[in-house]
Image (cartoon, rainbow, N blue to C red; front, side):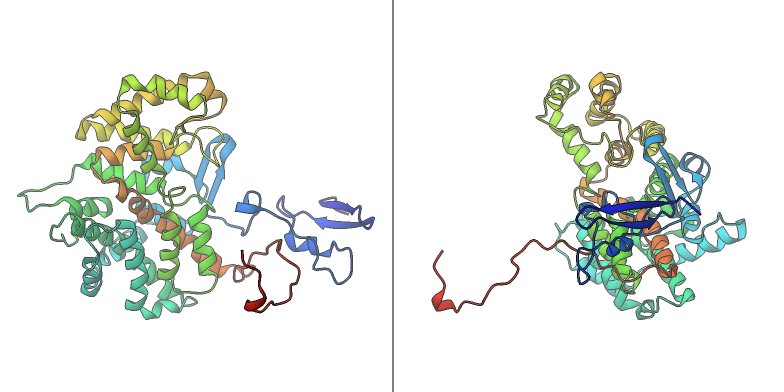
Length: 431
C-alpha cells in the first residue's frame, strides 16, 4: 500500500483523514471532507495572491527559481536565446515541439500575412486622444478585434483557434506601431513583411521615408531576443488572468485584452519603467553611493533587483546583459546607461545585496536596452504584451484542452455580519 498521502488529525473532533499526494500536491477539494458537523461546507485552504496554490497543471514552461532555471517545453532559455528566434519559440510554446523548416516557413508566413489590420481598426486607433497611453490603446484595440472576427467565439474549433493565433501575433506589433505614430503625429507605416517580425516592427515605428532605410541588425536581433525571453513565464498574474477569463470560453481577443490589462499594472508589466524612473532619480554616477546607502537604510527601493520567483540570479538577465552591449555599440552610451552599469557593479559586489540575493533581473536590463533604443517609457508594457501573447495563447489552448479545468471560481472566507434586520431609512441613526 502506498505511503504517498498525508494523515491529518482534526483536534476539534479527533477524527483522522487521509489526503492523497499527487505530483507533490494535495487536492484542495480533498480538504472538504474535514468537517465539525455533517452540514458544514468543509475545510478550505486560504492563500491570498496564490502564494502556494497550483490552479492548473502545465507542460509549457518550467521554472526553478532557486537554481536559476527557465525552460520552454524542456529547452533551456539560454540555448533558445542563442540559437532560436521569437517566432520559432512561439511555435514551440503553442504546439509543443520545435518546427521543421517547412512548418516554420508556413507558420512565419501565416503570421506575417496577418500583420495588416482592418482600416476600421486603424480609425479606432486614430480616434484616441493624442496623449492616450499606448497600452490603453492596445487593450481597447485587441478587445475590438473580437467584433471583426466573430468566428473567434468558436473556441472548440481547432482551425478557427489557429487562425486567431496567427491574427493576434501578426497584428499586435502593427497596433502598437500605429498607436505610437498617432502619439507623435506622423502617418502610419504599413507592414513590410520582408523585414522579419522584429525588423518589421521597428520599421513601422521609425521609417521616415528615408532612401535605402535599413533597421540596424543588432537592434532587430536585440528586440527579437527580448521578445523571446518574455514569451512565457509560467503562471504570472497576466497568464492567470488569461486562463481565468478564457475558462468562460470567451473569444481569445477578449481574453488577451484582459491579460493585457493585468500586464498594464505597474507591479507587473511596468517594472522596467520603474527602473528608468529610479535611474533618472539617481541622476548621476557620483550620486549612486548615497542612493545605495538609502536603500540599505530602508528609505528607498532598488528597482530591477530581486525577483519573486528567482531567489538567485534571473537566467534571463545574464542573456540580456550580453545583448545590451551589442545595442550600445549601435546607439552609443548615455548618462542613464552609465548610471545603470555602475549601479549593477556596486550591487553585485556589495555584501548587503549579495546576502539578500538582490541580483539584477530581466526588467533591469530590458529597461536600459529599450531606453537606449529610444522607446518612450510608456511603450514598455506594450513591448512586453506583444511577445507575452504567445505564452498567453499557449496557456489558453492548454486550458481549453484540459478536462480538469472548469470556469474559474475561487472561494472566499466570509468575514462580514452573519445576519442583520433591514432598518427603514427614517429609523436609522445619523453617522
